[in-house]
Length: 134
Figure 1 (cartoon, rainbow, N blue to C red):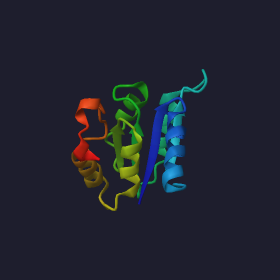
Figure 2: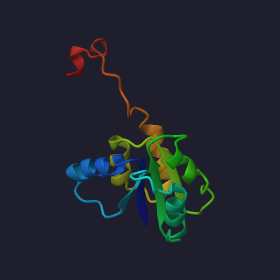
Figure 3: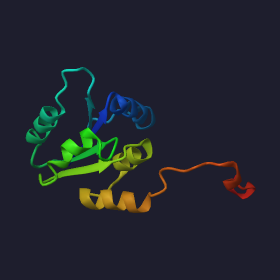
Figure 4: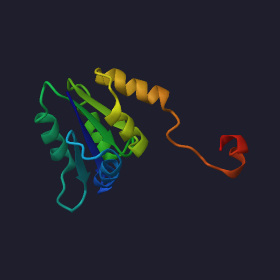
């Protein structure tokens, strides 16, 4: 079994989960961590609580918004935790791939998605579109 945690600065996580729900329906295995919503947020404690409460029998795929950002860096401290996987660069295409994958190995799933889907971001300039593509 696997769960997904979307961990972002502000409410980006909730917004993208809402978009996913419109496309795929409700996703009971996905949760959000929206960091820095008020001045009292303590990202270190929030992440520690999440990691310490992780079920040992459930893989947790954490997807953050910015590599090198404070949210991502806090989860980096826990990369040695068994069953915790960290991906940076949250976008809707990635989230769709993660939620629809039938791969049972979480490690293999992530590697396959990132290897096969390196085209998540496209620059759609006029000269790159040919009539044959329509």
